[in-house]
Length: 70
Image (spheres, rainbow, N blue to C red):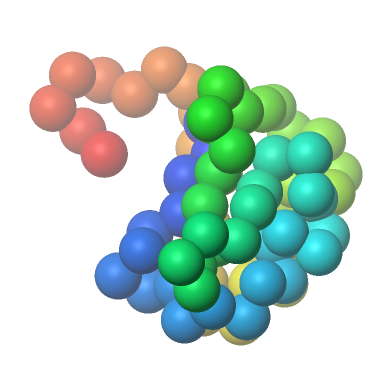
């Protein structure tokens, strides 16, 4: 599974960093995926962070993405 945060949607609640601090961090007022953790899998805390994100900025998808796709 691939994890990403859409910075255009994120408004900085920090819910992701609170729920899954091993995968997400809070940088410059926005949630981001920690370097090297974008393929973190489907651990329950990651799925919960995506589900509970108030701005719905977290995406968890099947990896790898096809070339040219986000």
